[in-house]
Length: 270
Image (cartoon, rainbow, N blue to C red; front, side):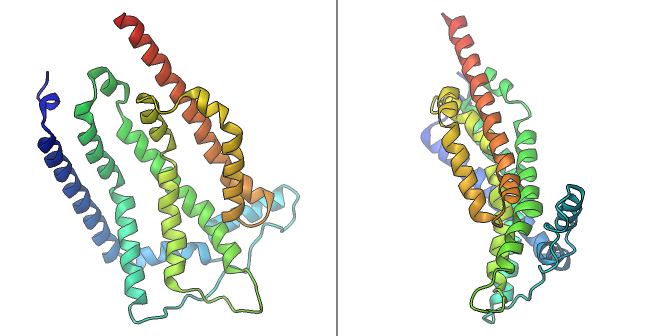
């Protein structure tokens, strides 16, 4: 047995502690960078509430090119943010810094988690997932971009212009931060679905047959979720649901590939 295989329970706890320390430090460094470059961060965050945001312009051009006239041209997105306490602005800045720190440090965070998991894998299993850190990071940042450029502006536009009882929309700065920053981070995590499915298939918790069986249920769940977080039109719902469903289908292929490799390995052993 290798040295890694002979690690005791306390050795594993020590290894986990070391990896967690590095993860916390990387988030702290990323957070400090976000805190220092305040003006740039504010510019990025304010994008989805600006009617000149790139997403709104593209939707308007798409609407006009597809014969929908100006139905997707948004000009009423701007609204004023307000702080309701002395600590509101600082707390919002701090929260953004932490979320931004997690996003910036994600490749390093996953690498540390991978270093913790790696000793428990066989050599052929490690070879099978070469480059997983790069693939995982690409999926994560793709999800963050999707959340920021698609989900956030659609949600901001719908919720920021929603009218009820003649109330003037002046949202709390924290509620806006939670919507834009947290939504972007959450979408990045959701885009890790293929990676999660790979490891679940590896340990036998999910199978491609089971994923195919519940495909229709997943479709309904995704469409319901899309209807909740997007404006009430079919175009926006499809726009949000489409990449998630693609990831689900991709995950089925991954699970099937894992199953074939496991079957081949068992045949060779016999």
